[in-house]
Amino acid sequence: MGGPRRGKRSAVTERATPFHCPYCGDEDLRPEENGAWLCSSCRRVFSVKFLGLSLPEVAKK
Image (cartoon, rainbow, N blue to C red; front, side, top):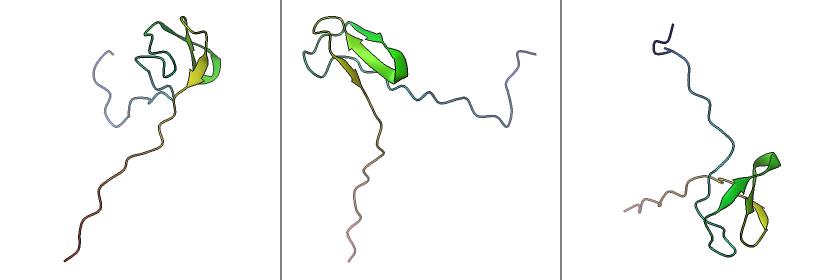
């Protein structure tokens, strides 16, 4: 009990954590339902979605 788990991956959360409001820049954000965030300053509710990685193309010679 309490030891490292082998063969199991830790759960990845669906919620991305923003550090500031994309509308007013304030940092006082509160989690809302369905993965949304409430800005306490401008009262806007928004969500953040991870779309993927953009890898540079390798030039072929």
